[in-house]
Image 1 (tube, protein in one colour):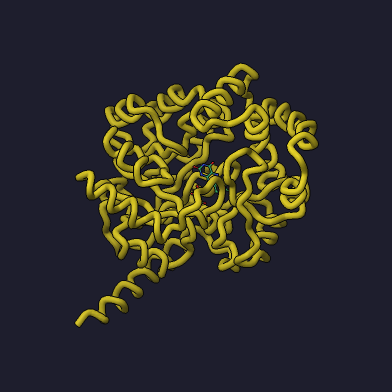
Image 2 (cartoon, helix red, strand yellow):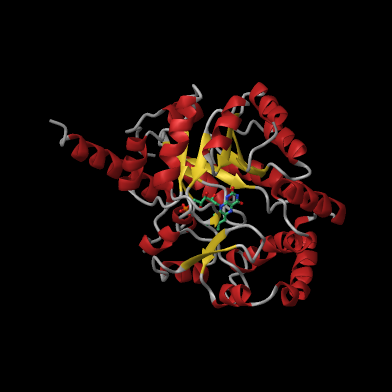
Length: 360
Ligand SMILES: Cc1cc2nc3c(=O)[nH]c(=O)nc-3n(C[C@H](O)[C@H](O)[C@H](O)COP(=O)(O)O)c2cc1C
């Protein structure tokens, strides 16, 4: 592992040497990728939304058998068993709790009381201010160019908006910038904006340590800058993914014709994830309440993990959907996590030195 070359409020908070986060990606951020990142000196985050409770516990223990460095777990704040999963993180001494969507204030308090670092992902400045008020230790923002569920505002505009809003609210919690990062220039730029680290999904998916099948990695590597699309037709929320023939078909098919295949895949997800119908319905109702989704959208939402699994785990590039950031168009190699983290932080140091020479 490279010695620390950049010290930021984030590296101090989390106890990792490098201000680089491998974000939680469903079906992708497993023990090998997370421990590979941790052993390279970055913060690796396990994705748990696609795991059963038992699988999550096994995955945590697996990471701990591969590294003694800090790591995190990404949780769905609106999942019915979010509380039990938080207890699991506490039980096993996980360092960071990362949340897709804002967690409840009581959950933040409980995790903090047990010494965890709480880092929700947010897509708007007002949410950053809200979770900072509840005691979140850091926030991760994801700009619109990022992979997976994403918002309409690009990182270059969302990041300063969030930083300004937090400053105006009197908060100086570290902000991790995600969406579109892949190299040292990006890290240098994010630090110059005032972020304390970068988070990367697509870039870490395309490493030797990621367990995504090679055929699928090759498809990503062959995609150019215009090869992704944001669609809400798959699960009712804007979701950035590769523009595959399957996605183009979904974009063109009516909701009614999608219903049959959707229900079949929902049944399969229920089997794979061990999620009972009651829990699925409860999660669906919570999503509906939180995001005002229709019944058809809820069914589609339950369907998404199976579609992602078909591509990212089973390598079926025709049947599956493949979440990806636009940055995929700038990536053309498969380094190890260590090679990647080293070159990003060393590259950022060079860029920061080069740019500071402009100061007269
Ligand atoms: C394949 C894939 C799966 C993802 N799954 C999740 C997830 O389960 N939870 C989550 O909070 N974010 C998820 N994301 C978003 C990433 O964590 C991250 O915010 C995003 O990839 C950053 O943008 P980038 O791809 O440009 O680096 C996913 C992204 C990708 C590419």
